[in-house]
Length: 305
Image (cartoon, rainbow, N blue to C red; front, side, top):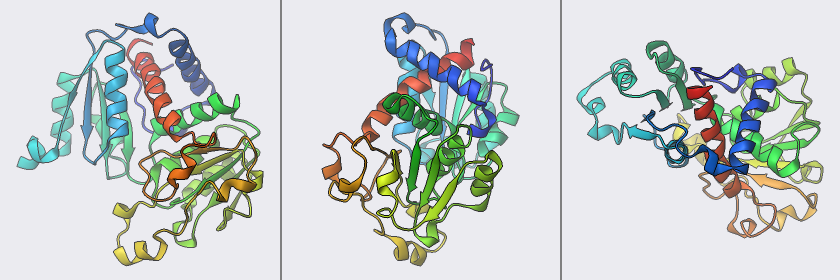
């Protein structure tokens, strides 16, 4: 089901496959000692053509915890990319060194192109504005862990739904399940792109686009917040129009359900106030922690089946 497989889009995976991944994650969490040394002798390559902290370190940590090792392309200005080496040649080189390649790139389709070149499995760690499949996997797993289910819940996805690939992937991931309703909450300028809405419609998911969190907050079981992707705005003036347009505070959550959870793929800027961190609603650091376990399970399934 997973062995030797590329991981390029969350929509490439069925619900059954995601449930297998989550069950494998459950098994690892319940008995971590059993999996030490599981990937001894295997090498992971991380090739990040965009900045990253959590995703890169999460994959590297996952590999180390399973007894494998990793190589890292490093800062681009210190690699052969700075000398003019093209993307394809870099991937070919890594393909000869590693058993699995994790790629991040600003251009949509870069990971799929890498997968066409490499014989080793390629994992998309985020490309363009749409795909970040392993983030979506860990997001779903976090909901399942906190709520005991993914189906039947009401979700609010707040923030930059136009440029944010974590938000887009999460919304697409929900289309694999049966949420009660999905509220897409954003300023007009940051509304979700048409292809994301069409995916929800094809899956028969009930959704509504709104601009105001307060009007839907009491209905939500999960509030997924993302930052405004300043670096993806083609015009800085457009960014200034929406900068700081939403901030979630502990006080603002007063009308929420008692068991609402707040998620965020991180990094955050100012969209979640620090006073939320100490509340029981804050799940974003737990989300990052669980991400390592989900990626451990994924790597094991890809490399050993």
